[in-house]
Length: 117
Image (tube, rainbow, N blue to C red):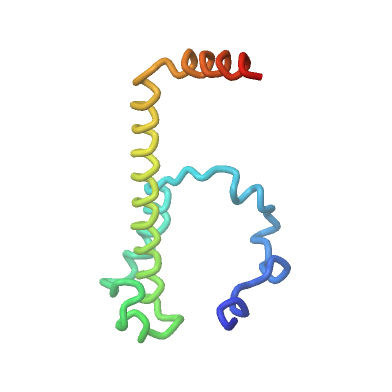
């Protein structure tokens, strides 16, 4: 398939600055503010930009700073989406953990299943 040919293989994908895979996936926690601090000065260099992926964006030359600004803006919006989703998941898990004594429930289930065996 043509799409599979476009994907880099593990051997073809260079490590960034000698980092290992483990260093890149050590934590999945996302900080929107850190992304924003990185992209804000770069976005300030251009007045405005089209939405990434739109026909206007696609028509820009690949080395156009406006095209790159749109990518940076999309990156910070994506980071915000991920961070807020992570916060919502954490809040939900705290609410769920407070609903019942999960340790007691697990122990009673374990006792039940150990009697069956």
